[in-house]
Length: 332
Image (cartoon, rainbow, N blue to C red; front, side):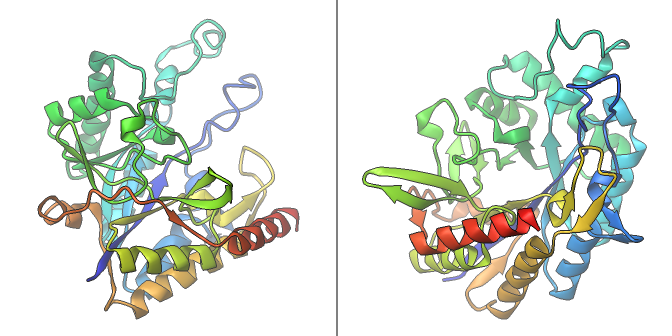
């Protein structure tokens, strides 16, 4: 049986140190998404070119609340670029951008610290945040989202109740190894799960090291997982009929930057190589894997069994090699 694989990218601008040093720093917009080096985009452009070269499609969770600082144009243009390339655009929400609604936002930082979590809020607040994101999509001419990913993968059940009320049927809000929900009943490692009537497809989390009964968890990302680990997990998921396998990345992970303002960039050759190998693998093994977007999954995931709770793992040797590989890449 074929395994669905979802290549997902969170497309977001960065605060750029503005909250910690408001006198000297400002948020960074398109520069942190396109990540141009010598006139060539090593971020979003690299992703779109690689997907096109291997005839694959992906879901881009586009952050919408940044308009409170940047206005509509910058991210609207990016979303339209992604749609024009034939990909899926869904809604990503980082509530911290709402801090810029205040005229004197710098002076308010100490008394009203920015809150970037969707968890722990009341339903009215969550409703307003999601509606702001949906209204931004409508202004941008982007199709109404059918899926949401919360910023930092911070979520609780109230978010799902509000999503149901607003008619958003899909989510990818959970990454147990990144931000485990306070509610243990929501600790889903992979597959598809119903929460308050919403279909949640979590970022795959796996065990990379075990110390007796204690397991160390990681979520499957391009920057955090080696290609050997990713291939091992894809093959294991296929054998065990676990899907979809949701993989997370960001355009900024494909460059190295020495400062939060993204003024000095260089291609991250290791992460670019990992992504290229992944795309080549998926293209060459279409007999076992479907590369599916959330828009495509909406029509079929509900009628297929997928409530898996098995925790996949990788050999410790792979994890140790990845740690050394990442350390070398970060150092040089």
